[in-house]
Length: 346
Figure 1 (cartoon, one colour):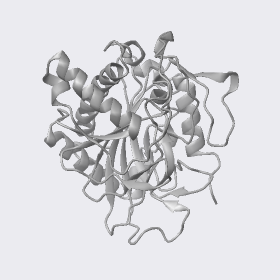
Figure 2: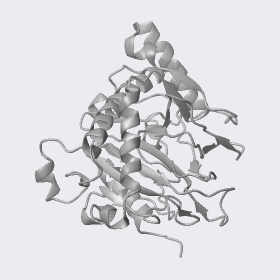
Figure 3: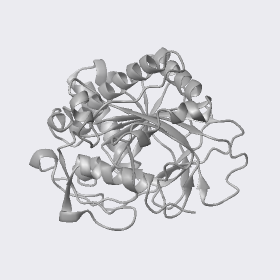
Figure 4: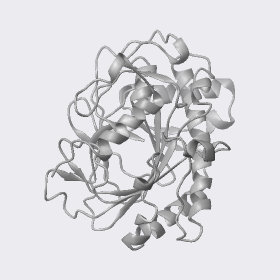
């Protein structure tokens, strides 16, 4: 899940681990997003793992984003989830509304155009989406208790929709666990440092559809997705060939994160920035689909266990969370609340 504009940093790692890290002394504007080959981490020696982790650490320190190739997710499963997205979003509105996220307390299912604004004080998002999350054996029990746990909603059409999403979800969650181990090595920690905090990860997967804005927005307040950072640990994004994603460097310039064939785009969110003591940057980014075609993307928001305590954060409205500490569930719940209901532009 996304999204909050700002965060508060801490030098403490998960479960009281002290990273000893300090934010960089100087922020250097980046001009391009690094590319990391993950093969060495997946199949290599300990030395290979450390080398790849160091590349990831540099990318996250300098940019907050990186491309990932040889990530291990079959190309056919990526193609299937994009086919499922196109099949779902091109259905009549009534069929999509039948699985509206408003039917649930866990924000899973469909949200329409204008149903979410990630920078609600400044822009209106031009996108629609469909969310799923982890179900697991206790999902039925959790579904009756409210909160972010529980069941997914599944549409009857298009055919093959559910298995395509479930396969891709499983792949990306496994990749998220591996990337968190690489993050730990990059921070000079033991590889399993984050394992306890992500053992029962409440990760969300989102299909997204952005309508065309040929030549760019005619209304300066109407973007595909407004400027924001992501709330959780890590985002793993697959995008189609159209492009439109950009990240803002420390000089205030927007740098295009254009598609690269067979590459995923990874960026850390506010929680991992906190856990890294500021060494990993949760970078502001946005989407503008200035093409004449619909843009599709699939995002996996990899989050900690819901009961993990995170540091206080500044909300989109500028108010700090009560008590100075929040659980992951409270933190993400506030993000949902603010992007789905509060401070919406007329």
